[in-house]
Length: 266
Image (cartoon, rainbow, N blue to C red; front, side, top):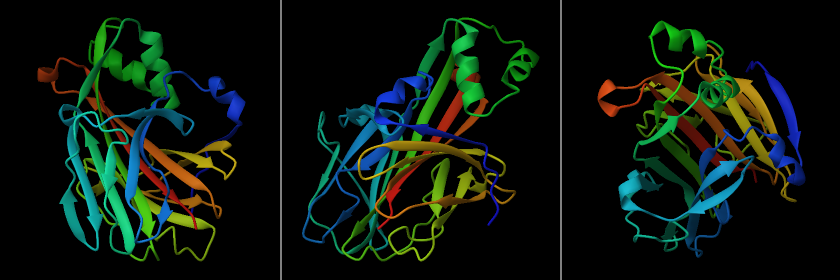
C-alpha cells in the first residue's frame, strides 16, 4: 500500500504548546482499549490537541448520534445529562466493540482572517484564500459551522471482528482489526458522503505507553486508502477534515466536518 508521507513532528509531553492553538481535535477515548468481557465499557469524549485534552460531559443537545456496536448489533446510547465519563456500559460480549459519536453542529465566528487561514493551512487547504475571495466573502467577522464524526474501536476479550462504514457523513474505516494485526501497518479507508475520499490529509497521533505523543501526516491515495504505521502497545488517533461551503441558512460561510478514529494495537 502506497502513502505520501507529508511531514513528521515529534511532540514530547512538555512541548505540546508548540502546536498551533487552532488544532483542536475531538475523539472518543476509552479508559482502556482492551478489556475483558467481565469489565464495563467506559469512555470519554475529549476535545484537545496532540492526544491530550479536556473530558467533555454528556449533553443530549450537543449529541446528534451516539451508538455502540457489538456483535453486529447497533444500540443507541442514551446517557444522563452531565455524565462524566460520557459513556458507561455494563460488560459486553467478547469481540470488537465500536463506539460512534456525532456531535450536533456548532458555529464559530472569526473576527479576523489570520486564525481561520492558519487552521485551513494546517489542515492542508492551501487554496483557502483564493476560494474565499472567489466567493466574495468578507475577511473579518465571518462564521464557520463545524461537526465531529468520531469512532473508537475497543477489544473486548479476544476483540475478534471487523470495522465497517456506519453511515457517518465522513468517517474512517479500519480495513483490518488492530487487535489482530500480523504486520506493522493498519490499512484504513477514509469516506465522505459514502464514497472514498482521495488525496486527503490524515493526521496521525501516536501515544506510547509512557504518554509521549508523536504526530505525523499521511495522505489518502486515489481510492481513499492509507497504511498507518503502528507499534504494539501504542494508542492512535486519526484525524481528517472536510472543508466545504456552508448552507447559507446556517449563517456560516464555511463548514468543517471532522472525522476521527481511535484504537490501540495489541
